[in-house]
Image 1: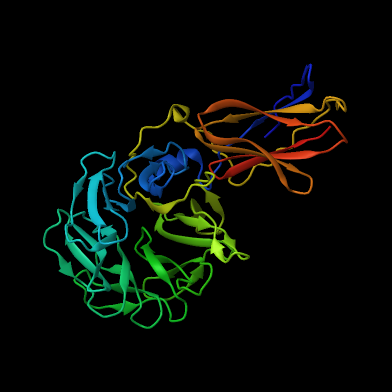
Image 2: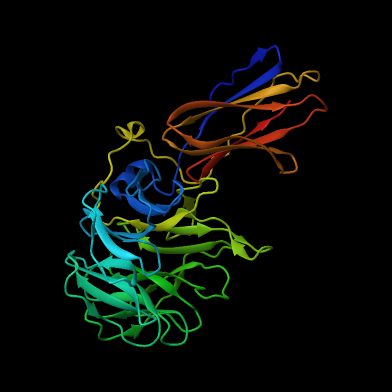
Length: 421
């Protein structure tokens, strides 16, 4: 894409460099395709508490669905895209299953058992819900009617069983179990019978998610206290043809597919080896064929994750003003724009770099400036901004000639430039 014409202005304080660039919110999915794939639910503490949000499949137009004092988490869309089941009250005994309409209305409670209930999954006809419940100090899979009646226990072994996912054809439920001595993905019939191990021992596979064609199961490896980071894989439902999706030093967890089966959405966090912990989490999309990742959220100091992709294709959110009409598809990946600069350097008064950027959609924006050694020297913008043109300033002091680099980030995508006297 050609760089827009550069504009240079002067003011009494020194030289002002103006860089005009367009930050294209490219994703692993073109904008028009993302709209056809339906929305993504996720949890975020951006409001100072854990609440549920919904965004478009390209990360745009986030909408808050819950805003209460209780922790809200582990949302899953109903097959028809009209309802969302989730856990309200956190992971402890206060955690109960609730259901609401896709727009956040009509909230009502399903379980009243004072157990820890989460990881809910719908049957493909929407008539039943399976979930994990902690009872008698053991995690097991239960199932009930979608109105909360007729609760039945499906797993009864003393090992932990959790993270259930109902197959699209309704004939199997995948789940995570420790019954072999290792975390592994298993499947069973909807009545709890015919339990079969799918992933091998020692792999520590967990968090299964069925592909839309009912043939493959997505999961993450390294699911143990001493395993370090996790990567993404998929495997045939009968345990054959184990395929790796990612092989990175980051921690990746995902169990939800796009409805076309080409992408998966989940949690992304960098590993901090020196401190032996994970950095903050964000929501990301991975291309199943290539493993390429696109972060959908990337807000400073804000944790986000536990994403679920609606399989119905039903648009749950009204498009933002910037999304009206057709959108031009853009290539995936990072856009590295290097603005040219011919402005003079003021050794007396220093100068001001005037960085202008266009946002096709609203989002959390971060503008950072670095010296040539890669050290961050300024962060003039770190906030949520609406769509449109924005301007920020970076004032550099008088002194020896120095080159600075800047980066504009929004929605997990970046574009960069150089402040060069």
